[in-house]
Length: 107
Image (cartoon, rainbow, N blue to C red; front, side, top):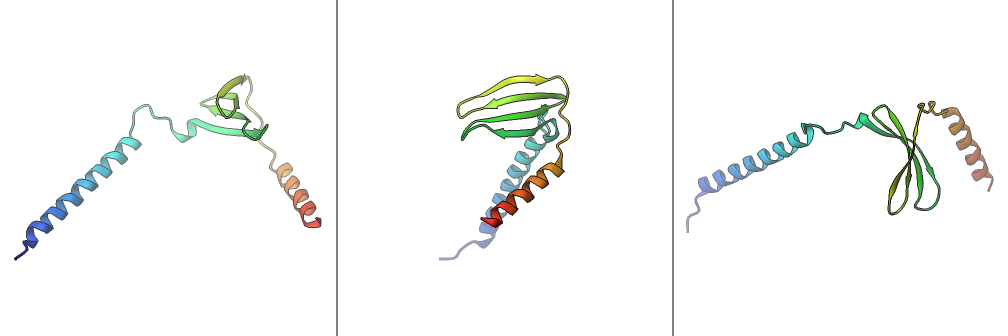
């Protein structure tokens, strides 16, 4: 029984074109959504674990700095900071890591 390869090739090319068009449309909708927040609009500035499932977060949303309590079942606005937090002191963190590594190596 003869097989029509031109029909199969045409079907394959058409299917590939439709898949590429759908992928392009989805990409464009995600990138060009009106009113979508950019990653620079919202950022977690500080995070502190209070328990196994509870955290205290300082989040920047636009120009506002919010203190949020995050639990296993909810997120609560605790406060809005009047002044922005100072930049974190990276030297303190580095020193703390060095001390922790020295203690770990001794044990």
